[in-house]
Image (tube, rainbow, N blue to C red; front, side, top):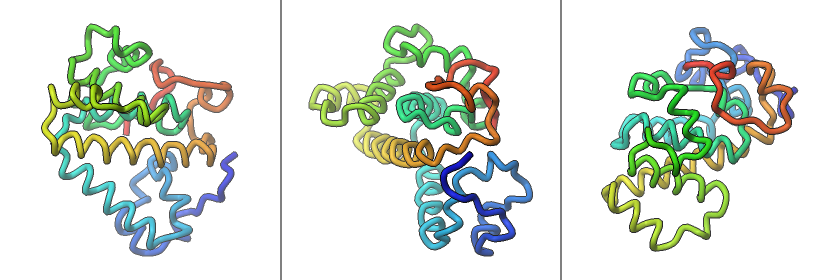
Length: 195
């Protein structure tokens, strides 16, 4: 059971309804908006930020999704781990690739750029002060300064809101494995929904 009351779309501010169009989405796809609807002004601002990150992205969808899932594992955000975004799947994210996230630095099917971005994301989620000049030097081997800033903003979004979602314990609509396990990982095809 979620620790914060979800609001049904008929209780949302009309601007949130217009932005999300909840009638076209499952409960899980409505995601955090069901909670953020308690604070519509903040929700709309957050949605604008999230949309700006998404629509102006220069990083590959595949890379962003892999980083998102690795961060979700450390956050133990069950709803984050249960979802695969369709644009990332279209960009080559497979469950075999997701299984590589268990030990990404050893994976042969991840590029050096993906490994660097994943490492940055996992450090942001676990030990952000360990991100030093060497970590940024490795990022610069693969990304422009603008892409590093974009990656940082994206990862900060994932870390912060993934942790928030994890504390709210949004598991009602998730596959059974995500409801009962003490700790869970995003790898395993029986656990996902494509969105």
